[in-house]
Image (tube, rainbow, N blue to C red; front, side, top):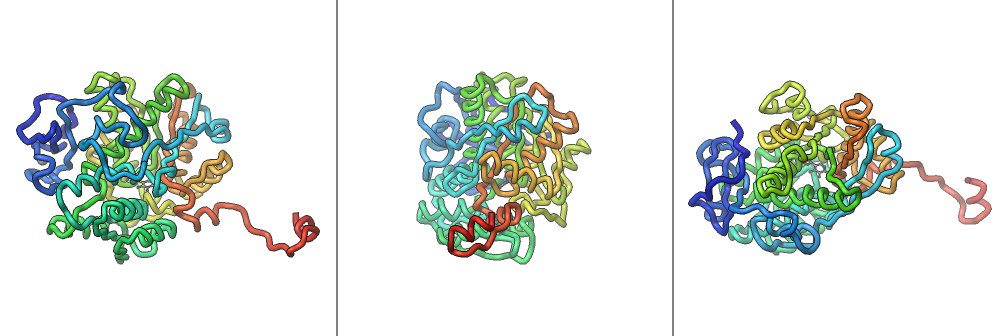
Length: 415
Ligand SMILES: *Cc1c(COP(=O)(O)O)cnc(C)c1O
Ligand SMILES: [Zn+2]
């Protein structure tokens, strides 16, 4: 059983109307008394709950903290994250049998990926808990964001990365923002196992997406999509297509919708269909959705060019799978070549993304071709990270350079 019901009585464990609840056994835990990542009773995932859920009228300002009333603390460690653009994409829209396609480009966050939305909240909670060393396992973007926000909060940061499998731009960010970078001889899932054990031993405060506070910040992607879509088209989208790694965003978007329903601001039938996309070489969520399983089977060997979603054991699956089902969504796997094609198409529409981000558009194309998306649907694709995150992949997907002499005639001759 998964307990994702909101509302009901406020438990004794609350502080300022905020508490943690286990999604497996419903146990409640005080939010800021001790450092806790999983249910002390059953080991299940925790989720932040509130005595009150806001409606759109309660939001004011811009960026992630516009949504402070939906977040556990009134302010964060902030470098103006959120408020990312919702683009039209004419070339992509023309190629699919769908009424309207928009791209929510999370690559336009301060460190170039959506992880900033989680860190502005998570690093603030770390301050409140009084911890002095932050850590994460990462396929790259989490480490870049944590390094940046940790620097801003003047706190020590450790990042554990799978050796040789992190894109250059991301390591550069973690290095310059001053994180201690540890290259692990193992894949992302092995890195997470190690850092989770360090956290259990009390050595570090863990800021992977198993941390329930981080997902609160990422919820604001959903709130922005709803507000921006309504402003652009008069309607909320029917579907949100997103790349899936640890399934943190999938879980966060579903929580966003559940909270709006609890607040009376959305009908259950209006929840956009959550549609997850994975790379064929790392698709345990797709397998679980296809087979109707409540749990994912860990894939030990994963491989894809889209390194940000090279993950075989998505930790947030217990929260994300019910979201995909309850919203009428689905999950689909795409090949690396389909990802690169989508990356090129996005680039021709003026939207520069890293490979994992392009998986969303590749998934939309595949589902549209298969007739699994209605021709009348209004769809938003989430692009999670910026082109410059992975310069090698961008150069490989892009055109070649031409050597020319240093004179105008020579240049014209070469054209
Ligand atoms: C972290 C990340 C993902 C995966 O997100 P989850 O919430 O873990 O599913 C996808 N794309 C990019 C670029 C990322 O950095
Ligand atoms: Zn529990």
